[in-house]
Length: 541
Ligand code: ADP
Image 1 (cartoon, protein in one colour):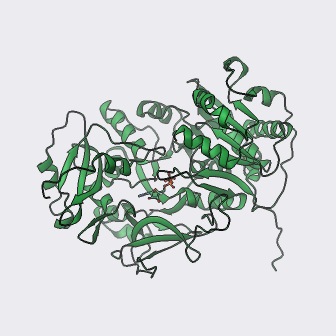
Image 2 (tube, protein in one colour; image 1 turned 30 degrees about the vertical axis):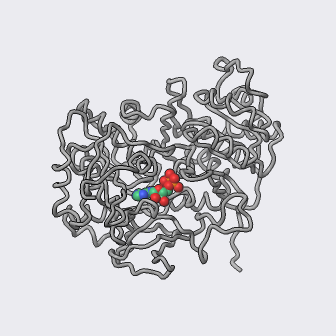
Image 3 (spheres, helix red, strand yellow; image 1 turned 120 degrees about the horizontal axis):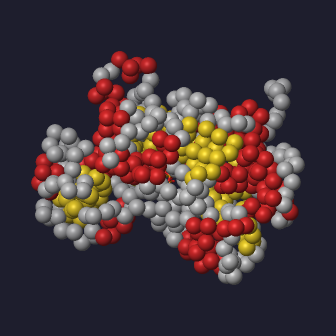
């Protein structure tokens, strides 16, 4: 056996490190009230210790689940450390899920307390009576903003708890495999499933995410995670920012283009992160008002495929690099990142762009493979397309409370994505397996078809689905939102596919709509579009 110290990897050690080494670095938040709040990592650590004492007074014990319904903000950051650091389990809930699903999660997780931003007061009032395990609800507000609600039993005030608790608190040491955080999947089909991260998995994920060829987080950056702290720990940024001493800018509830742009410029944000729909909104705002992006140099994009056309506009027009990443709730979430290797630097810009469109190479800690329907491994030739499987120390083994079953296939987690892997190890998602279009027994990848549509200057958003065809079973149908005032016909768009995809991949028809349905994590809801257009008759049928 090796002879090094066996210090457990614990979430609390991150905020201790931040306090000691970059105590004066700032955390800036847009509050629910609309104003800007600023303080330091040292202040955050001090208030997290007070909150840890408050939790102990409330009777929260090691392993108890404590839920949050909150935006990205400093109080949520304090809870990240106070709850996990004290040995309890932080259960972040996505407020965009249906109220019934939230009630299901509280019940399933047996949450002991629920912390909430005042935005969600109405939601809590609706839910409170059905939350049998919950001993109290804490409004993340000061005394002056406390609501007079009689429908919420044992309603407490966050700032009262902080004020009445001492900041003398020693973070406990325990097994690094203890649970730190619980996040449920979005549950587009059936009830959400809980993924229970450990202190060890969270720390390893945070370390790995900071690498230069991963998210490249450092103390020289001003980081604004738009990706919510209520879903997959905001891709780990509350940890990686504190680990490196990056200044943190938390945008609160205002995620429209104008509010984000205001924060980017005002706070000198250099790196931001979120799903593609957010950046489309921001880009529109900047284009419409002839603005610039200030010091912003990099946007980390994931959750859905990044349209190459948007990548190009950001880079060529504004000098902002879009970094494509892929992952999922079950992977904490980071799996692959698309950065160039030395051999790519000799390529032309167009050739480099082809690499950068992919979801990227696995970061160390994630092992991946593609298999056919029978589970046989497929070659990494950039052409063979198969089911993507992963394994690693921050990949789920089993869902919360699903003892007796396993989420794995022969030790690998099936992601539900379909992908190719190039000889250099660059993975490209062609589809989610349930979105694949099957035409005459062959697969058509909807993402590639959407990317072609998105490259048309008149297209704002596009989704491609399979609809019934009497001869081919399914054929691709393109559903498109046009840019405001843009003129575009069905034939013009279909003709733009010439030479870009195999002829038989060309969509059979186009439907123009005002908006596409978006789910709880900002992704386009294809199953809803499929439902709406179930009876669409193709002209080729
Ligand atoms: P998250 O909301 O954090 O992305 P989910 O678990 O809700 O996590 O969704 C994960 C799924 O999102 C993946 O399995 C994949 O289908 C899709 N996804 C994530 N990133 C990308 C990407 N860069 N390109 C295409 N699909 C992606």
